[in-house]
Length: 114
Image (cartoon, rainbow, N blue to C red):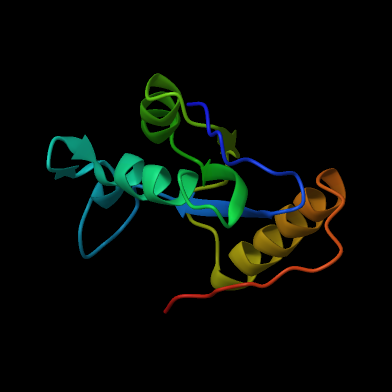
């Protein structure tokens, strides 16, 4: 995808996407008006004038394949399947720090969901 509105001074978005949902299995790949949900979310953020980059962060081969096929950018991280909540928090913090260094970010906001 090519975004004419990209500007390196703008924010970057990371979309966490996993297939391991207990309540709604394979949620990220569910069809929404002809597109997988993850692609619908990706495109909405991609065309935002507030963001310079959008990345899907996943541990799923299937999600990575779908995102790349649709021209999106993906950060692929294999994590062990039975990670504890503490281990997941630690991995999220390490990944956040790595990305902040990579993009030379001086300020960041974190949105957490329940």
